[in-house]
Amino acid sequence: MIEISGLRKTYVMGEETVHALAGVSLTIKRGESVAIIGPSGSGKSSLMNILGGLDRPSDGAYRFEGEDVGHFDDNELAGFRSRRIGFVFQSFQLLPRLTALQNVELPMIYAGIEPAERKERAAVLLDKVGLGSRMGHRPTQMSGGQQQRVAIARSLANQPDLLLADEPTGALDTQTGQDVLRLFQELNAEGLTLVLVTHDLEVAAEARRRVTFRDGLIVSDYGATS
Amino acid sequence: MMKPVDLVRFATGAIVAHPMRSALTSLGVVIGVAAVVMMTSIGLGAQHMVTSAIGGLGSNMLIISPGASRGPGGGFVSQGAGTGMSLDDGDAEAIKAQVENIAAVAPAVRGGAQLAAEGANWNTRVEGVTADYLVARDLTIESGRMFDDREARQGKKVVVIGQTIAKELYGDADPIGKRLRVGTVPFEIIGVLTSKGQSGFGQDQDDIVLGPLSAVRSRIVGRRVRGDNVQTIYVKAATAEDLDRVQEDVTNLLRERHRIRQGAEDDFSVQNMASIMEAMSASTKTFTGLLAAVAAVSLLVGGIGIMNIMLVAVTERTREIGLRMAVGARRAWVLYQFALEAVVLSFAGGVIGLMIGLGGAWLMSTLAGWPMAIASWAVPTALGFSMLVGLVFGAYPAWRAAQLDPIEALRRE
Image (cartoon, each protein chain N blue to C red):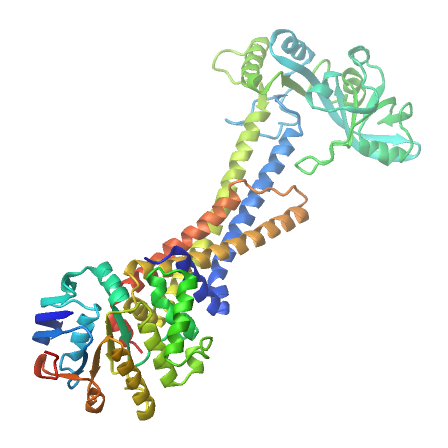
C-alpha cells in the first residue's frame, strides 16, 4: 500500500542544514501494524508528517496505492488526508467548543457528507469506541482516555486506509493507555492499517512490526509480513 | 468537497461562542454605520429646509432691486436705503408688456408701520403691491378678496392682512370689513391671506399687511419713496425653463430703459431664485458630504478593530486551524471561514448600526422639527459598506490563517 524509496527531508535552520530523513526506503502492506521507534530527533515525526500528507519530502518517492503523494499540491494533499488518513495525536487535538459528536463530524464536513449521514456515522463511531452515552459532552467534561477515544472515532470518520497515531498514549496513565492500545489492536484486526509513532518500547511491543530510526535512517526493521 | 452552508455554520459558531467579544468587536462598525446614516440624514434634512425656505419666496421668480448687485453671484440681501431709486412703475409696465413668457410682474414698496385697531397695537411690515403680487409670491386669499388693479391705481384705502395680524388684533373675530389704522391712515380690511408659516429664515410670513401700491407709497412709506418709484419688482416666469431667458430679457430691457451704456454697471440687480437655490443646495451638499466623510472614518476605525480581533483569534486558534487542515480542510476553506467570520461580525454591526442610525435620525428630525429624510441609497450603502469593511479587514487575518503550516500549528501550545 505504501512505498517509500530514498526519502529525504532537509530543513535549513539558520546556517545549519538538518537532515531529518537521510534516505529512507520502506514498504508497508495493507493490514499491517507498524511501530516506528526512535529517540526524539531521529526522524520518526518527519516520516509520519510525510506519510500523513502534512508535509512533502525534499527528495525521494512516496507512493500510496500507486498515487504519487510526494508530488501532490496543497489541495491534493488536503483531499488525500481527508479520504485516506486518520490522525491520532498525543494531545488529542479536540476542538473545545464542540461536543464529542461534533468533533467526530468535523472530517466528514470537509469531505462534504450530508448532515444526517454524518451525524449517524459519528454516533456509530462513538458507540464503537465505547462513548455512546457521551455524545453531547464537550472535551472539558471528559477524562483523557475518553478524549483520546473521541479522537480515535474522529480519525475513523471518513473510513481511512491508514491510521497514523503519534504517541497516542503519551498523555494517558498506564491503564487508559492500554485500553487505547487494545482499541487500536481491535481496529487492526478488522483490517485497518496502523502506523504508531512512539519512543516507548512497551507501546511498540503491541505492534507486529517494529521499525527503529536513528539520525534519519532506519537501523532495524523486525516483523515485516513477507 | 465541503458545503458552503457548513462554512457559514463554522463562522457563526465561533461568533456565538464569544458573545461579549463579538459584540465589542462589532461595536466600531455599529457606531460607524449609525454615524453615516445619521449624518447623511441631517445633511439631507438641512437641504430640504433650504429648498423649502427659498421655494417659499415664490417659485420661478426673479427679484429686481435698485442699485448694483455686489459682485458676481449677487448678494442675497437687498441693498436697502441710499442705493438709489432706479426702478419705477414704468419699468414694471414695460416688463409686463415687452418680456415674453412671464406669469406675473409685481412692483412693490414696503415700510414699517404701527397698526391700531379696537385698542390693540401691532408693529409690522406693510407692503404696497398690485393684484399680481399674490401670483408672483404664490400667496392665496383665505377669506374675503384681494383688491384689484383699479383699486390699486386709484389708491383706495383697503388692505389684505396676514393670519398673525388677524389673530393679534382681532382674536377669533372675523376681521373682514373692520377698520384698521396703519400709521395714521385708516384702511378697510377686505381679505385675509392663507397662512404660510415661518419662512426658512425664521421670519413669520403671516405678519404682513398688503395695501394698494399707490396708497401705501404715498401715505405710509412716503418720505423714502417719491413719485412713482418702487423698491422691488417681482417677476414670475411662466415655467422654470423660461427663467434664465426672462432674466436676460428683463436685464436688457431695463438697461435700455435706464440708458446704461455698454460696459457700464447696471443700476439695478436681478436675483434669480433658482440659481440662489442651486448655490444653497450645493453648499448643503458639500456639508452633507463632509459629515458623511467624518462618519466614514469611524467606519474605517471599526474595520481596523475587526482586523485586530481577527488577528488575535487566528493566533489563539492556531491549533484549531492545524487540526482542521489535518482532517482535510483546504487552505482556501480556512481562508473562507475566517473571512466569513469577519464579514458576519461586520455585517451584523452594520444592521444594528443602521437601526440605531434610523432611530437617531428620527429623533433628531423630531427635535429639529423638520421632516425625516433618509437618502434612498443610505440603507443599501450602509449594509454594503459594512460587508465590504469585514471583507477588506478580514482578508489579511484570514490569509494569515490559511498560510499556517499544519505541523507547526498542531504543535503550538
